[in-house]
Image (cartoon, helix red, strand yellow):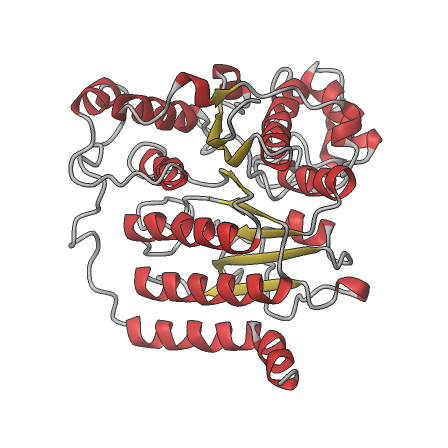
Length: 390
């Protein structure tokens, strides 16, 4: 009998084929940067690396309309007229058409499904697919750099194949809208999204009032935090929310989306999180997976647009948490030397950010208090339910 692994790392150089164009902010070279950083650390063994499978049309159709899948195929072959493509959210500034986009997108989905099968079949406690986390894709429309929504497909796959109750936790700076709406009426899927308020940021949703509907009412949670939120408040909101939601829902498996775009350096968002939060987020998810799910934890990537200074460090920390390895101090010199030649800015030399990462934020107390009030409102139903049961 094969020994159960602690964790598996889904990776293939082919994942880099999901590429819009050279100037587009979504750049999957960040997966390669992370992979090589972990290899340089000697923290990623060959037997822990698993190639992603290609998702079938049947897999993708668990969430997406078949007409949309056909449109993506045609677009990738240059056979979809522009006016039809726009109806499907394709060919936009955010989600431009690129060659073989269906095949590249199906591989990303297959990577997350590979991670699911390893965990749900008991071959590994944890699995990481940094190519996944494309949480804005809708049933019949691409959105926000996302063509197929691998997380939604993976959740529906777990529901159908394994009968699992799934807790989806999204800490991308952008609201996990596509996943939320896919399961808005499903009481066996609980979504928790902690994100920058949609007042100034795409997609503009994720209010505390979005709680689910029908049988799914009470299983959708959103904590929209204020712009310029810092580590202390971000970590407090996250820790409190995920603990209370997990206790309330009692999942069979946890799927975390680990966008790294809440960091101060990120060019597309307005938050002030540092690497301290990216060490903390997977640590808490790991603990809760063992508390409620016999260790079953699947993690995917997501946003993150400072691909040089932020994403490799943040994503490497997820794997290192899965392996229970602690790192601090300087990054490997070989890795820094190799990638500095390509990077358009100076790479961060250490795992930690400098203490003076950004100027003091004058509204810190006001922001912290507002986030706490938002958190209290978001968790009101859980807390009132808990008090009523005593």
